[in-house]
Image (cartoon, rainbow, N blue to C red; front, side):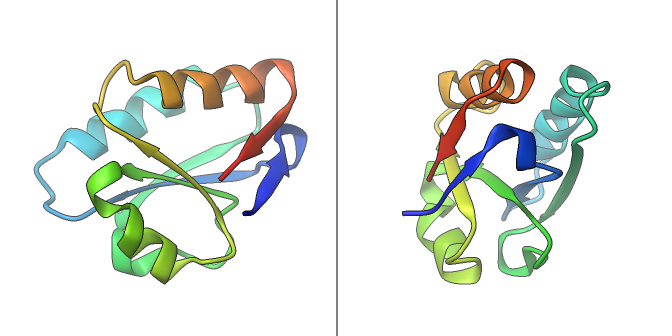
Length: 102
């Protein structure tokens, strides 16, 4: 499985499917939390993950589709859009250093 050193993360993609707004809110929250880190956060459909993404965040229900769309990217699936421990762990790794695993 892919992994990445947190210092090498430059772009996080929040991938979605339904477009209900929850993933847009998550992307906005991440932008605020990471504003001084040099990491860009973008929101895209799960089938259109850009090649320059370093980490892909998506709801666990979309994880298989995200892996198919971007098999070489670190994928962080989550269960809840705001306050999920997987997202909190990613932010902490970026801020304090460490490795992020798929």
